[in-house]
Image (cartoon, rainbow, N blue to C red; front, side, top):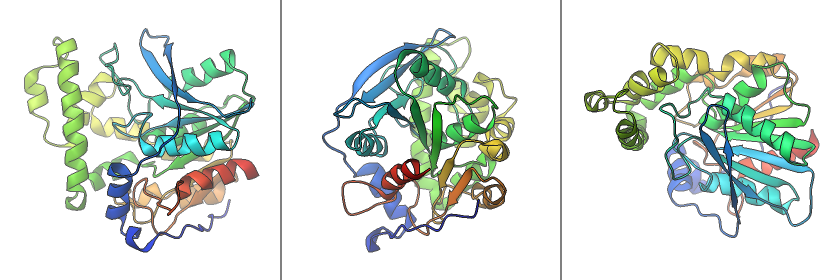
Length: 319
């Protein structure tokens, strides 16, 4: 599929990636969305909390929304998507990854960029217990990688899944990890690391036999965190093994579901490999849009909805 020509025009003050990223993460608010929580039990004994929003009229359409690293279902990028879709007669369910709903999950392991089994269980739960015949999946950043990997790693994607959308997605994790460790991203890097380490301290109290205080104290970078916890807890050899096996880039050629990737060219979190031009040109189901602006999940528009939200609705409406 030829590369999609983007129509996104960033407001003047939001043309710098840093500004649009910070504003969208810290200052944007979305009002008027009602969410109802459902807890589902997973096959391994853990749980996930799903936050549902419903259109005014009964509908057979649903969008599943996945957040990024250390996000949750109440982040504005999640609720903005849910609000737009429910206003257009499409129900929305915002998934909280393990441990991200305000309550620690039960297991020592939690979630990561390649953990598609939980998404699979969410999809199966919805298909078996709900009434939706058209389901779309939209993931942001880490959740975008989960979305793409889920759609590309299997040949038996349920027929109800009609489209996927991935926004600001680090589909080549090694490259993105290197970018996050550069000076230009030091504020973001340190913020992510601080939140992850604080969460890990709670995990250590739950599982003192699996994780020592000294291990946590040794974490100075995000790469250290992935070496100490993410890789070991989830069955990888080390951080590099985790990045290699969990990157969705290697699965893009196998995607058979219409899928849109929106990655801004001024996203400081993404390496050159995170713009899969070759894969998009050779897979008719893969649509790659690379706006000049937008930063990381910062596609600001001067109305209540962001560009990535209206673009996602337009995409699923016209496939």
